[in-house]
Image (tube, rainbow, N blue to C red; front, side, top):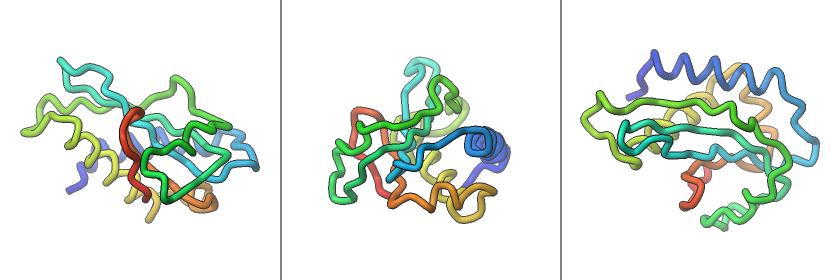
Length: 130
């Protein structure tokens, strides 16, 4: 179940990025890169990049390495230390749920949906095509 207070902060972050960025026309896909910011403190982050390639059959996500744009160091973080499950899988589920909700009803969802694909996953892990 989506946590509305965290989701509202996520929406504000993503709206700001999508409204104020010049995303290249060569963008084929967007990828939400997940990071473990602090294992000890159970803090996870997400960054959005645009890729100039897309291959929905490539779960390893080599296509996502063809970055044409990135939000850079503007990373949205979530502290999961007060949750029952503080592991990376739970963090990925949390971020995935928020991205899916944004793709359904976000203010700038058309920017993301105009690409051939959207994906999410930890930087050195497999990607989930949304």
